[in-house]
Image 1 (cartoon, helix red, strand yellow):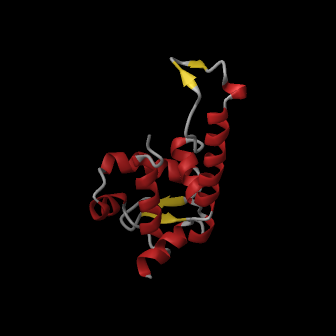
Image 2 (image 1 turned 45 degrees about the vertical axis):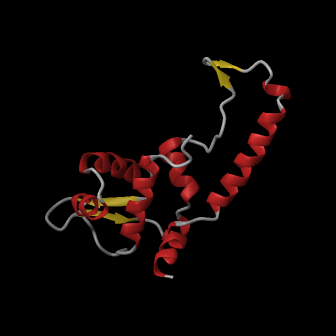
Length: 136
């Protein structure tokens, strides 16, 4: 089980990079090279960030991408949901069928409780908080 996918990781790292240069348009290639991310993979991630209004793009020689929202307003849970859906530890599936014991399962109740804790913790983490961790 992965709590954070590669897509989410790259998106978060991209947003952090952009937040450190909030008034500049930075090329995706520059971010790719600087962060050690595959360029074509990052382009796909950037398109999603644009479509969710987290970054804006500008074409041309001085073009690139720039963060669109304040870093403290971008929560990690929101980025994760864009790239991997809701935080879920168990889908209660067995061979692609819903578990018959799902409604009465004590394990499922505990997993849901843990999922709630994890979601709340990620709600408290913003791009700005991560940047503060770098600087501090």
